[in-house]
Image (cartoon, rainbow, N blue to C red; front, side, top):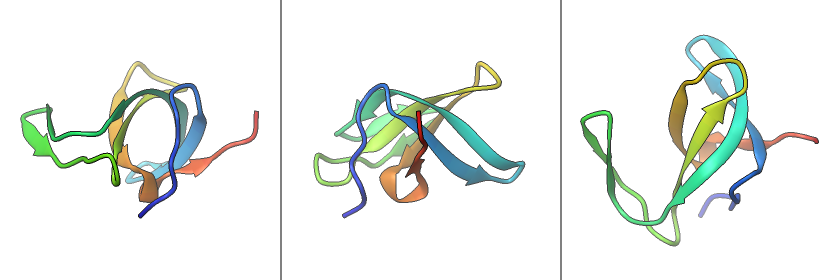
Length: 71
């Protein structure tokens, strides 16, 4: 089980383009469609929708890919 986060948390993760940060806007606890693909999520292993700090891009990630950033 990965770390749990909540809506409003400021998090960071590594992408192909380098380090990215953003704010969690939604926590998904059931499977959902995202950009044409089914993403797997459950209450024990949720996925998080994150609004990038620098762009309007929204990313979906599991908690294992994220780390909490200071305020």
